[in-house]
Length: 98
Image (cartoon, rainbow, N blue to C red; front, side, top):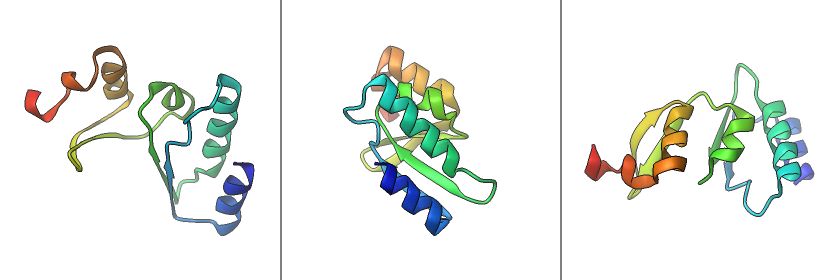
């Protein structure tokens, strides 16, 4: 995984898309991944992280959170959306409920 983040830094990508980078990680590895992601962020680039869990977002502090349902973004907001999802599940913000 470190090689992946090193490549992203060297390439200086404007946008990095990271899909479920927290899958199967213990808390120490999760903190390492979050530190690496935070190291990629600059004022002129973006990182799109696809995750199903709040824990990673607590270490990265996202600017925006988008929730998708059936391939569409149905809700956009801040970290509070992820906290609602963690506590109440997707039914709490499902498009059917909006």
